[in-house]
Image 1 (cartoon, helix red, strand yellow):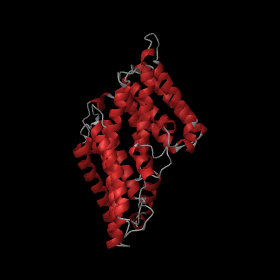
Image 2 (cartoon, rainbow, N blue to C red; image 1 turned 90 degrees about the vertical axis):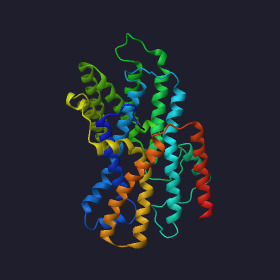
Image 3 (cartoon, helix red, strand yellow; image 1 turned 30 degrees about the vertical axis):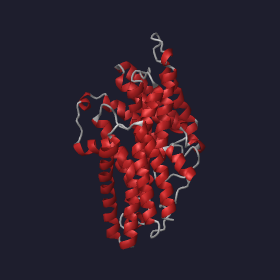
Image 4 (cartoon, rainbow, N blue to C red; image 1 turned 60 degrees about the vertical axis):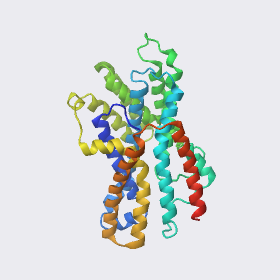
Length: 368
C-alpha cells in the first residue's frame, strides 16, 4: 500500500484516516466504550458515527496512487499487467495474513473468559480459504477481523483499473484530446455514484466503491494536467459529485468528493509542493496499512483485560482506550518494519496462505 515516491500531504491524510478508523473501532467494540460514554457521550457518539467514514479517504487516496502508478497520463505504462497484479496481491496479502493469524490467536485466547459478540467465532475451512483468497465478502463468509473487507475491495479496485488500462494499451490514439482509458474511468465513476453505490447488494464488489476510487484517479490527472485542463477535471468532478448527492445524499460520498477536490487544490498549490510534512504524521501515514491490519487484535485484547481485571471501571476504560491506540501504532510499526516494507515472493505468499489456513484450523481444534 506504499507509494514509490512518498508525498507528505498524502501521508498526512492517510495518517489522520488511519487514526480515525482505530478510534472508531475502539469506540465501537467491547465494554470499554460503554464505560467511557458515561463521562464523554458526545465523543463516543461522534467516533462511532463519523470516524468510520475515514475509509472513504483511503479509497480516494488508493485511486490517486493507482493512477499515478499505472496510468499517470491516462495511458497504461505497465507492460505485464498479470505480473503487476500478482505483485500487488503479494504486497497486500502477506502482512494481512500475519494480522489475521494474530487476530485468531487473540480471539481463541480470550474467548474462554470473555464472551462477547465482538470476539470472532472459530473459523471453519470455507471461511479460512475465502480469506486466503481475499474473497470473503464475495463468497459470503463472515470476516475474521473488523475492517478487513477493505483489503479485498482494494485488490478488486486495483485489478479492475489495471486490467482496464492494460486492455486499452494498444488503443491509445495520440490525436484524441482525452485518452480512452480516462473516458471509461469517468463513465465507471458515474455508473458507480449514480447506480451501484446506491444499492447495498453491490457492497462486496469493486463497482460499489469505484465512484470514490475513480474520483481519486481523476484527482491525480487533474494535479498533473496543465491549468486549463485541470480546471476542466475539477468541473467534471464537481458536477459528478453534485449529481450523485442531489440524486441520493450520502455523507460518505460527500466526504470522498471533498477529499478528491481538496487533493487537487492542495497538491497544485506551490507552497505545498515542497512541504516535508510533520514527522509523526509522515511516519503514521507510512505504516498506516500495518496499523489498520493489527489494531482490531489489540482492541480485543485490551477490552478482554479490562473486563477480566477492572470490570466497570471508568478510569481503567479511559486508560484502556489510550493504551489500545498506542499499542495499535506500536504493533503497526513493528509489522511494517518486519513484513510490509519487504517485497515478498510468491513462495512467501503461498507459505502464508497455507499458514493462515493451518493456524486457523489448529486454533479451532486445539482450543475448542
